[in-house]
Image 1 (cartoon, rainbow, N blue to C red):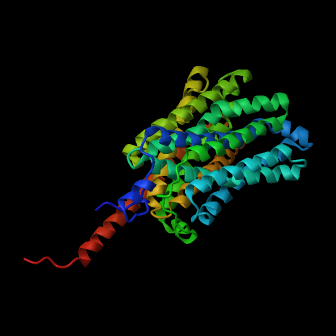
Image 2 (cartoon, rainbow, N blue to C red; image 1 turned 45 degrees about the horizontal axis):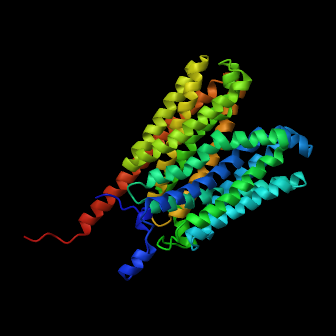
Image 3 (cartoon, rainbow, N blue to C red; image 1 turned 90 degrees about the vertical axis):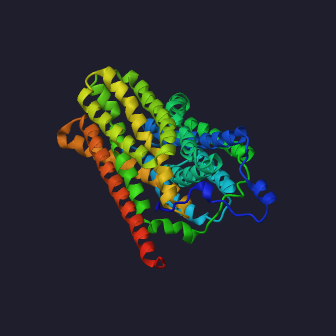
Length: 430
């Protein structure tokens, strides 16, 4: 007896008449759906750009604000803190709001936060502005994933989620380098002006291309908070924290590993980062297609592949060509898990999908912070710049262990429900 799960396509409000159903159904032509997903991906592009561009402009920010570079790093931490806090809080408090209205409102808040970053006159306000910009991050991606899955239908929902997440991946390939170049040549604030422009464009694109979504069921805060009572939600979030922690341990120290071990010139490091970003683009596409066939297997393959590639990177990093090729495949393997994890969370959360989907991005930001910290720990312990990759491989194995534990627990629960139904069913008559 399979476990009952709820997908976005199941979350459709029942109507009393055929005409009412057809009036509220998702648009049938491919073009409106495609343009709606593209509009949501554009928002992901803006969010991805603002999330990562500050890392490359820290020296510029520190100089302009007359603070040390480590102090300027608080700007990045403030954004990440906003993501972690905002994702569950906004998802729960806005549970009754129309998904269309909510997506537009979240992008308005994100744009205002970045506009405040552009004009912040003091360092204190500069810390507050990224925090505000980070608050909508997780909720936006969570709700966008639900909307994309709903529009695409149950057979193509993971692929649609991957397409929305492509905006985040493309930001690493194009948005961050472009904004960083502008920041270097025209002042660091100009980089965030670009993000504001993207935000305004996204608001317009969402308003023009999103259907009414009246057929998407809304819930309430207490129902959404019910996701926190489901063990499978916590299992899936922990898979993301552990599995992605390894990828971020690798990525945080990739620059130094390539220059000090592979002998890559500093001027060519951006090419390596672009290869990683291209890997993320491919991973989102491939991972979405794979997750539509088998969610659990897609996560397993992603974790296994990431672990193997990270181990190979540690072994072959002194060969610059091997290191660059493996950098691409780390991006593929790590990011291929995102659509599957997002889809699994939506399934196991049952009627609390918005909160669960948003929490995925809180988990990924925790993985970012934890991976960078653990990578620094093994380097400080004297194990060198191969160590973060080896650590990442170990964390991928740990992610597999958590996945297996989750599947075993899920099987036992389903078997328990089946056995209980057999015991309580009426006796068979001859």
